[in-house]
Image (tube, rainbow, N blue to C red):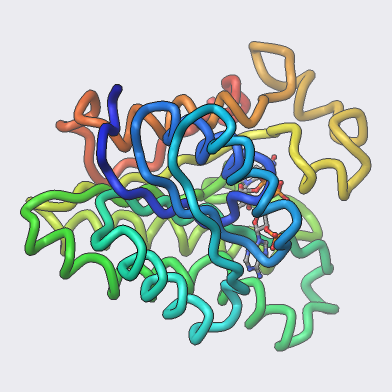
Length: 246
Ligand SMILES: NC(=O)c1ccc[n+]([C@@H]2O[C@H](COP(=O)([O-])OP(=O)(O)OC[C@H]3O[C@@H](n4cnc5c(N)ncnc54)[C@H](OP(=O)(O)O)[C@@H]3O)[C@@H](O)[C@H]2O)c1
């Protein structure tokens, strides 16, 4: 087991790649904190993990609200006493053209996609530093490298996430390693919300592996980054996109 007795917070784990990662981390021995706003789905993830004989709990959190993020830290420490792995994965999509993005929408996207990650790291890094070891993984995107028409707030937030990940690596080492995963097209609820993979067939046609990614494709990389197998990898934004962004 690669994460035996580690405590892992996985934000945005009620669905998609966060859910797949929470399940995989638990199977690898971690005590997993599942988070998101939807209690029914959070409970379903924890029930699945427990039914397999592994350990998890959920905390309902709206990561656009910093007071909720603090509750996530408090409840994790109350239940499990520490944090070894933090996966900042919760994310929201914005599809407003540049001229139409309201300041509220911009702020919400940045709160969910970036600010909550900074806040969580500020809270858990001292715990990891004191232990002499910890791992942070952030979810960036292929939108951390390029831009597409009509996604200004999302693209900007994911560029920020890439920069924040590198800054975190510099400032939190040597005890804490920080890397980001930059997914390409992964079949999750987020992609279904824009019509499913077929609505963005061009992204499939334009990558050498010629298929949509699965949540498990991301979970496997998250496990690698969370474990000692990646102990010499730090400050990287790793594309997991089937070659889309070559
Ligand atoms: N799918 C893709 O093709 C793709 C590509 C590149 C990057 N990404 C990134 O991958 C990450 C995971 O997305 P996904 O594709 O797995 O989509 P998903 O299935 O829709 O999952 C998104 C997760 O984020 C949580 N979330 C969203 N807003 C939240 C909020 N305000 N407070 C708390 N939790 C919130 C959702 O939980 P609740 O609904 O329970 O609140 C859910 O668990 C995101 O950061 C996304 O930007 C996705």
